[in-house]
Image 1 (cartoon, rainbow, N blue to C red):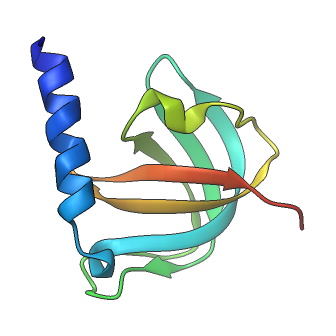
Image 2 (image 1 turned 120 degrees about the vertical axis):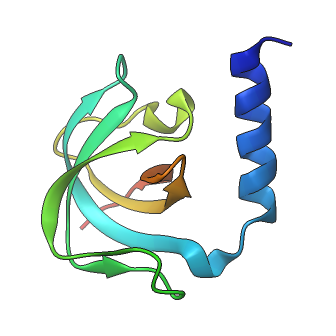
Length: 101
């Protein structure tokens, strides 16, 4: 197992053990997707986690994703529901689903 595979596996374990209180569930509009850097830019309303460890005003923000697969099928202009949590010291998107508005 490479170090990258190990880190990915450890993050999966961390995600499965994590409390839902430190997660943010929100909707927004995708402005850009950069699979090369593993980022997605989302225009979102004010968001915050139940445990108050994450809070952001309404803004357009570049988020890193926890896994490259999260970006599969997502493109600029899509309305999405997303989940984010704090990983590696940053707020990272862990799941995105397209929605119709």
